[in-house]
Image 1 (tube, one colour):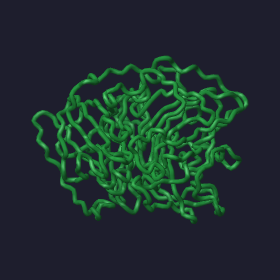
Image 2 (tube, one colour; image 1 turned 45 degrees about the horizontal axis):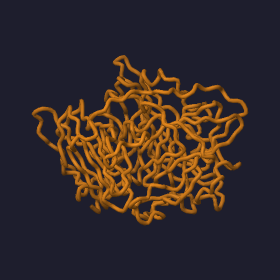
Image 3 (cartoon, rainbow, N blue to C red; image 1 turned 90 degrees about the vertical axis):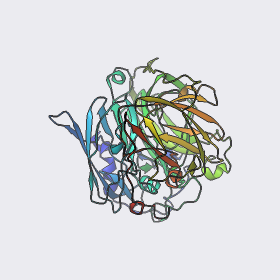
Image 4 (cartoon, rainbow, N blue to C red; image 1 turned 30 degrees about the vertical axis):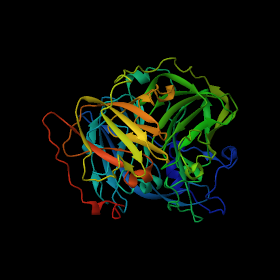
Length: 500
């Protein structure tokens, strides 16, 4: 494990010879299994220490680096405590965690804990910017079930650029209930983090950051855990893939090249009530899914992204990459495999927050770079929500563009899609959902524990170009008797915001 965990660091240190033609290209089906592949880097587990006060402490440094994303080509990148991406943070439900985060970038950034239930002042949105050379020290108690979450920057107007340059990492929560289940859980061996992203490159290896579509940065090269053309050595009969769509705007329709069935065991917010047998699953930016795949000794099987089949209401599908096919990762099974238990028939129970026919508390319409006909204003609070309340929101994409919808601080349940029960794959806890045009999504969420009259949470489209352009709003969660006292932001100090 040491050599594979050290691989990310090694990427920055490896001698690099640029080979012409090795930069930007679409992965042709089959290419990920070729001899040119490299072992999938496994992000190391973030070191932590638990003090006498019981607090688990982590240290992260936001820094620049150089990564061999494409073999033979040096690419300037940004990473957390490394050249690209970041270590996997791991903690347990009920633990208090604390972070010391130093920004060594030449510009301000932030660190948002996507999917995490935590105080607004530590949410890491655009109100918690870290200036160059400054240190940010958030701390909170984890109060949610085992799940695969992630962390990434959230500077208003510049989120897409910061994520595209490499700033993303996974945050795994463990708990007793999930640990009691006989699922693959040996990190880096049969429990594999998989961050899927797309990139475009200039001929010199630098990232191409020129916008060409209404989606923003749409890449033609697939990057997994920081590199192109990766394979995963498999030594067990079953493998759990914790997949994050870490792209800025691209949707993935994930399937295996031979059409084999896999078990979906978890979504954004944790394990489902029972596994769902699927042959493909669509993920929009920010969404996560945990899959368990069964392999046979000696075989190669390729995880592939197929064309997006849900195209209703979307114009110019080619412009959004809906026609593209990419090989994502080849799984190479060794000639003898360690036996794995069957996936349990039931996983984690889930209590419904509201009935499917509950009248909505609020409604949201998504169109162009606006929500409810308004673009983001850092100094405008769009709504206040009383603590300890369950709300039902309806969300409708009125556009002919792809959009999704993400809410900070909560995990929500999808009660209905155009009045019908959601499919089993969308039946668990979610924090991000793709919105097909002219379809109404009914979501239930509970706002608990944390109140703050000053610091807001966000709701927004997680296609990062859309978010940067203003497709975002903010809300306060208030305790009894609290009155809004929102902070006033100096917008000239926000990266990427001088043009707004």
